[in-house]
Length: 334
Image (cartoon, rainbow, N blue to C red; front, top):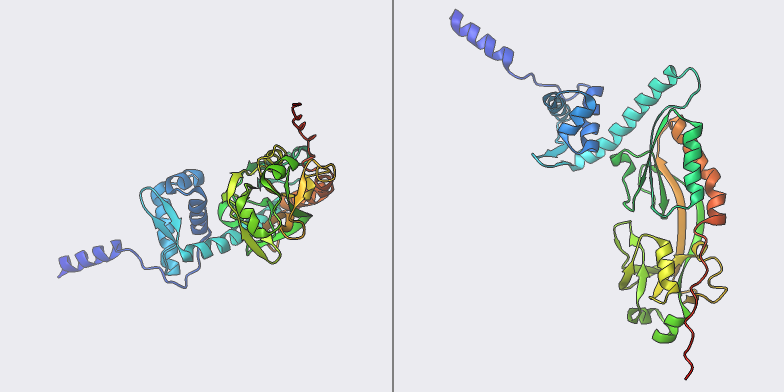
């Protein structure tokens, strides 16, 4: 009996302890989860946290057991969020940001801004923006600034960005947006192109023309253009995420481009480009700075947002100044 009892007691002592689902989540588990999501790798996340991979795995397992749901799909080569994990990640990020802000509020005694600032911006940015970034970094040397130039429409909450510059009227849930500039989108083409291919008079006639397009959501060539309250489907003959290249392509007679008026300067007034289907094909281009909605925005993030708002007039005045139009080919004398 004594031997059997000792064996049963030993087995019970090594049996994994069941964690009650109503037990509060630990901060270490939230850190393990969010870092794994952002690093997209358990091994990389463990290195960044300075803990063994096995410890990270145990923390994730405990977290899922507390919540009673699976948060991550894990294989040897990939890591992805479940639907529940996606929702939990967004809330976890808010909690951890609040904890970091609370720590900073009691540690900061000299009013010096500190912290990491991750910024996502499109590749088409003029010199005044670059000067704004450099001035901010110089004014706040204790802020670690990371600026990612990409056409990818990043998920600020999931990818761990603090601020993004967007040329879009759409704002994702959980984000705030401050508009820096608004502008009209109009269709334009060179006189030479229209003389050769004809000027479209109706939306349907666009199907016969070469359309020069940007990328939809920064990923794929546009397949529609705005028309009133709807859209018209077009075929992208030439696509780029650089509006200057699209403008140059239009000037050189490659097709019809849909561009912001601010990018055209006086090219329409001078006759270098012709406004096509005025009042029919048109839309609004909104440039905004977006950032996660938080009760207490970190001071260095708020300061950077204000710096971009202060930069907005320079954007309106000098953004993408058009070059002189290319010389038109001379007609040969017969």
